[in-house]
Length: 266
Image (cartoon, rainbow, N blue to C red):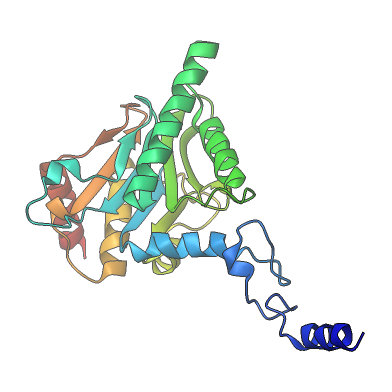
């Protein structure tokens, strides 16, 4: 009896690793909320995206949508043409992905599969808002199973919708998605959002920029938050417009023309 009492007392004096408010242990399990209502592993996914050091910008205009991201070559021996954060999901839907390369590759494959399945089943192209919704559902599942981890990837989908016109959606690792007039992702996300809030404001925000203004607003925002003059080869610029609904990347020559126009304007 005495031995039992001693063991019982010893157990009662052990520190609790999961005590309320301590936060200890909650970051080891993706499926367990902390007492403050946080999922630490999901928050770490957001930090993993920022740690890559890439910033991306998306801006919606009255007849076009533009996404801009940095193009960083990790090694001088790497073929620059194989390094990209811009992807065609269908001919009409573009994706700018920011985060860890392997996770991005997996997400792109799933998005293309979802779009192809939709076209096969219904006979027409998947609407961009429905694709963003499906990918958000997919991301959300990764936050509730212990044998999975969240994807370290932030997605920006762009397209011209037949009914709603230019569309820009952003998905995050928590499974949240929503349409934007302008947005950003990556290392300098908050600084870029502050810049865009000043540029894109008012009742008609996101509905007044021409294609040229849309592209130059996105590039100008990236240059401002990075605090440096960027070269054409350091950027990737993707565009869809009413005139050409196919998602395409601008050539270095076209990017250079926009950079020159921005510098002359400033």
